[in-house]
Image 1 (cartoon, rainbow, N blue to C red):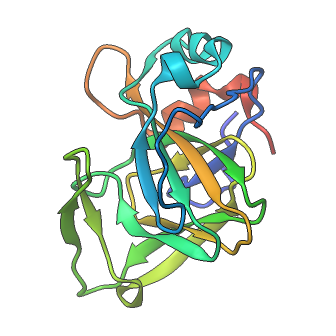
Image 2 (spheres, one colour):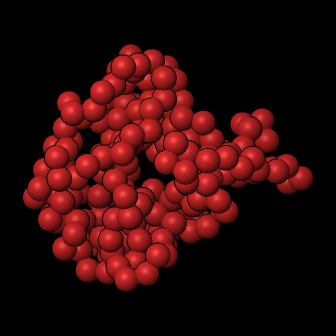
Image 3 (cartoon, rainbow, N blue to C red):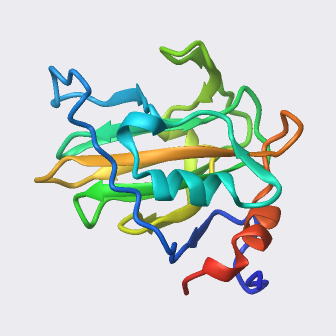
Length: 194
């Protein structure tokens, strides 16, 4: 059941998934773990196949691509929106490493503007300078979560351990439309953790 006492927009919801992902990053050629990384994940070679089957069998959703982000100790993933406009879109995130790492959601201050940029995978997205934003909410990311990725957010890793996050954009099964946060909570209702 959706928690209507949570502030809107809906930003974060912990999940208790029945299958562990067992992400295997050993096949990646990781030369510099002192900087933020964004890598593509091959679910056939790098993920527990029970988890892949579990995700693929959830009615109404599909994973558009499998990706992971690395935040080194004492560093942050800059403020960004995963899309080229502010929207209601959700990802399933599973983080490993530093237990007190967190995701922070931001709101652009009135009169300030977004920056437009592109990822290494040619995905267009928005960024913003921290001094042009105010914090909306933050959450620790030490267990599987639905996260709002269609508004400004960042990650912070206080260290001393690195932080990996598997990030799965959730899309409607038959169309190229991201699933809204409220719909994702309904779809994952049997796995909500409070």
